[in-house]
Length: 387
Image (tube, rainbow, N blue to C red; front, side, top):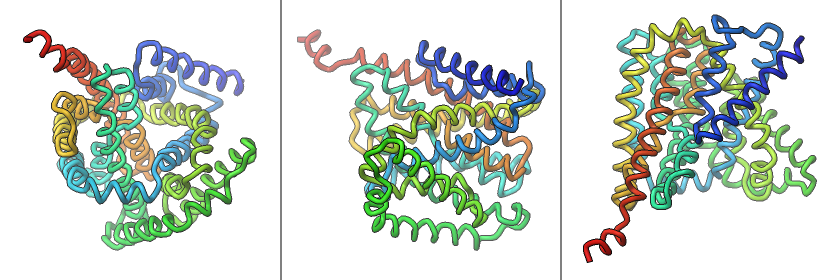
């Protein structure tokens, strides 16, 4: 029975992935909806495989953040931070503030408000890349500006997540500035060390055997995640930092080998977040999610437009940059997962699920509309018509 149910779950996720590929849709909201359908209070709750799905979701979160870390070396992150500090600061202020304010107004407390601020802040680089991949040739020129902003956000998350993990020490009962300050200093020290050891570490882990390289990389990522967990940090944060530590051939080989595993367990992770939320809890918080979605869609669009202008983007691509940044996804769900594991606030999970689905839909529609307009408006065509 257990294998039957597990096979049905994986095949169901495969069908959703096929539907997403067929209609150029992001997979994250589909997996979340599937989780809602098969969780407690759903259409057909899972019975025998929930324990495996829970463990798979934990591995999925570790692999999602590990692969995100692999995409940026510590050197690249620090260089981007120096070159794009002002757009990063504007992005942080405009998009963290709505979440924090709403959390405080709702009486959730400062810790839950800090989690909600992180959820509303970080865009989904995966969804943004998918949207721009299928945009017109002129709209695709916006991708490098989206990548720049995404790198800044990843750097902020490399600090933000350890701060949240530090605030969770003691169950969040006593909020103190000491743990987050220690976390910030620790990340700074880590990045400084990573600059010196990443090449040697990469050489030590690298192997021409795909099998040996895969086992080495996975063992390293899960070991660092385990060390972080034992140190009362967050396993997910440890995985993110482990990915940042690697560079060179090991990192390149790891991305190729680990991504299929990441896709499998990430799908289980997103579905598990939906499984953890009773669909009946979403209608009472839907108004909050819609309000947050509308406000932060506007602030993220404004952030992307202004940042693209400051970084030298063409006028016609600035709106596409802002629209592509509207969807929230992997990091937002990861933050909600950390909060759920610590039982921070019961309503945070339902709000996040509804919020992510809403922003992905809004961002996808706006990006496609603006991309079509940008692609139609070609200055050479206009000159020819008026010549």
